[in-house]
Image (tube, rainbow, N blue to C red):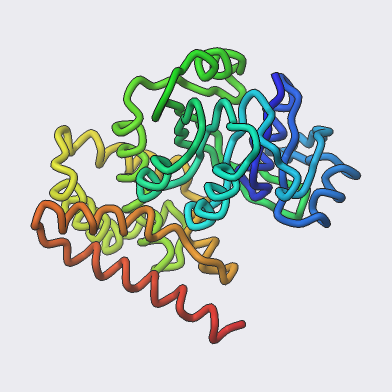
Length: 300
């Protein structure tokens, strides 16, 4: 099977490194320079003390034609609009697309896509891009996948092809799958980004933990969650298991990049409006992060 991967950030590089052990992979980059470096050096994957090199084909995104059996879209949510426009203007309609974005704000965008089968994924791995061709796998997890639209036969075949080293697990309900990840992201990401702390501090610091629980309660109210205690314990477990990790939103703020706050808290605020519910804490954290993003222009 030929697999295309759009996006050569931390998740794109991580997926390309592991998937290339099973399938033929072409990774599509934003710049010609990064494509040239990947073609020259391969993708260098660092996992604890082990280092491996995966040789894959790399091309700039302008050369993507959507002809692979499966294309994985691993860009940030705010970069999706341009990708969707490109998909809809391809001469041949892509067969299978797998989207790996955080949050749930992108679901309405996917309804505009001309494609036979559209899949969604939820990534639990931790990864850090060190340079254009080097990525650290610094948090093991799994990738959950589900069908958003169309037929899931190829997705079943694809997910069954990977070992415990890089598990891909098929889920029946895409909405519940993304909602579970959204709850975690909506608590951990904005808190760590504003407080500028590693994940573990949210449960190790008593004051921060109080804020975590309060924010979680408001999210539970908006999503009408059942089994709230189970969800809270999952968040606590993730904070402990990834105690030394810096969340993706914190890394985005530190690197002077846009965040995925619209796809995460923005989606929840839209839900609150739809249900005519108040969400004061979510609104505060949303605007604090937007304020941090607003500093980008003054720093650049």
